Length: 335
Picture 1 (cartoon, rainbow, N blue to C red):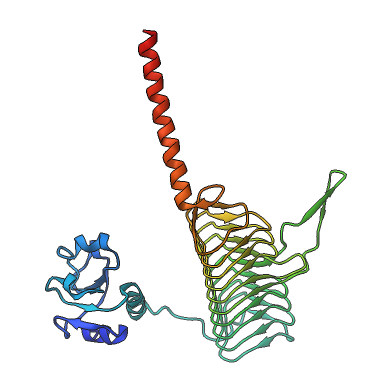
Picture 2: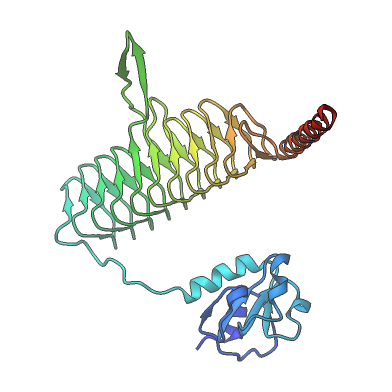
């Protein structure tokens, strides 16, 4: 049985209230359920503490509990990650190599590897230990997959693609396809052969339906600890530094260099051949169109520091209001 004390030990927190309180799951603070634990990480959710039906709450300050049962930790968001993992459903995993999998005799398969139905492993592929590969995947020649990595279903790794250790790749991802490289001569579009690779570091997570193109000459590289949401597009020769967070539909154009620990909001992106410094943050729909230093927050198209963007927006509204007032004054004078 899971009790409040068990969860407190799990997250290295301090119990407030009944340590023997039984709990069977997790719920949100504004839609709490009896018998579950919830958490509060932002001030805007404090209003729900007194009314939530949840049986216990994870907080950063014990006074917020107002006499309710709970756990006090330094960072409730980090703590809830461990609690969610504790209660997460244990789905059945692939076990061994399915009889319909097609594996080239010159492929190297590590120990404790699972390969699902109808997956194809071509010549020269190297798969590390404790790797899980789902159904209908295509791993082309020379590709490598590091230890403890997990590939879901319907994934395509092109020739020579390198996946690091402890990576997670979700369904529909295509990694190592040709970059968009053409040169136009006499109204003819001539394809540039794409002979680089894709190299993905360790502990990287690639969301569903992401596409990462191989380099034209240099490699396309994704640093350790990067996390990509669904539908992200990375073009040829791009370099993404370690620890970057890219949310849905972010697009990074060819040969752009992104520093470490950068964050891109939904549908943000960058044009080709620009360099972005470490720890830059881009709001949703932001378009990077020139080199930008790190350590700042940007918004707009073209991307500007968010304080400048806000000032420009304020001036626009003021001009719009002045234009309206001027029109009203003109009508009075003319009448």
